[in-house]
Image (cartoon, rainbow, N blue to C red; front, side, top):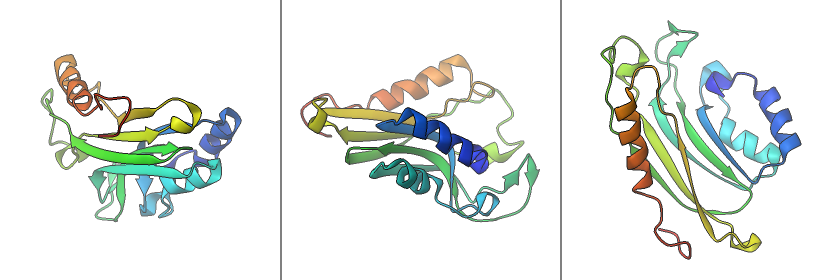
Length: 165
């Protein structure tokens, strides 16, 4: 959902699927370039999902189609939307290994994050589910760096299916 693009098409597709949990990456919250909407909350409301969690990766995103526009406000990040209650949410900053161009673009102020959300799905017999929302960068991070990021996210997966962490 980068920059709020094709929001209506995303809504139409998800309405047909009727998901219980949705994971979003590169979602804008209160960013002028995408109408200053909280896309996570808007999408949750339209889909009838009653709970959501959000973690920012970029504060004040100021690029539109690769062109620097100056400070604008808002956040871009990841969200988990759920039909069932999210009983815990944990943001985790991921280790970052770059292939050399870390400060040539918005990457100089972006931090890679993982949002780990614990969903209480006991009402349908699934217990507690831990859902991770993250965006691993295949272009600027080598495979060893992506593996380290994924391992970091897994550290925060609840060891017990009977209680949230």
